[in-house]
Image (cartoon, rainbow over all chains, first blue to last red):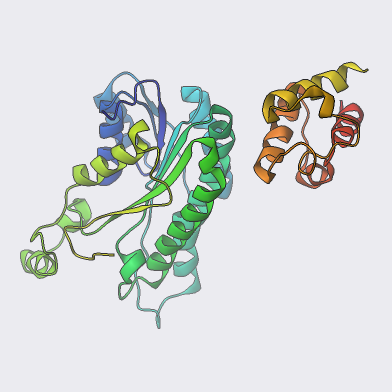
Length: 245
Length: 77
């Protein structure tokens, strides 16, 4: 099950904790992977760890021209893109009353507009192949909201809506478009929290702990697989029961 | 019949799975040949590839019949 031999996957934000775990999972299932991100050094290190079938395609998603060239770069490297994982995301947290327009726009540009542009660019090849998988990494806050994240919650909720619209357009061509919505996941970002802060967060999670990047990657692997062909326009929440939506 | 016309016809037959006899000059892809809007996008993509041309979006919108397609491609290539 979940054999991705011969499939070619582009993963954005592959230098981060969740992105790297996704890349390892897809690669482990046999896929060829193109690792994208802004920082080339961790991407190259990951590619070296994975060995064969791993390519590095650096891209700054806040640069519209760079975004426009990413699908082509991945296609040049791998011969095509069968699986697109829009994982890259940024935060510019601030209370709405204090949020600058730049903080709003930066988050919308990277988390929503760049993902949308990559989906549209990837469709051509997937339509011709009559097979494709798009997995967008959203967030529990896209469904529940979160103080200080008006921009981030809007971008993630927007990505869910965009996924559902695209899913309907291309379903007849064997292409699925789904979202994975993580809750609190233990990454270098959450390592910075104090034990008290972590304990306070865990009390809000029925599972009593944060998730792991691998638990997100497993959800992505399923949605990227041939077996998930009948799941489209779905949001798979992976949050330890923190929000049941 | 011109070479371009034959090649366009072949693409339409393959893509829409219609009888070649139904593909007349004035046959509308959507109204007569059973294409949906996504099919028309795919046909344009296939024409671009076959003839090595670029069909801009506004021009693509005006390609509604088999004759439109042959005319546009003849002028563009």
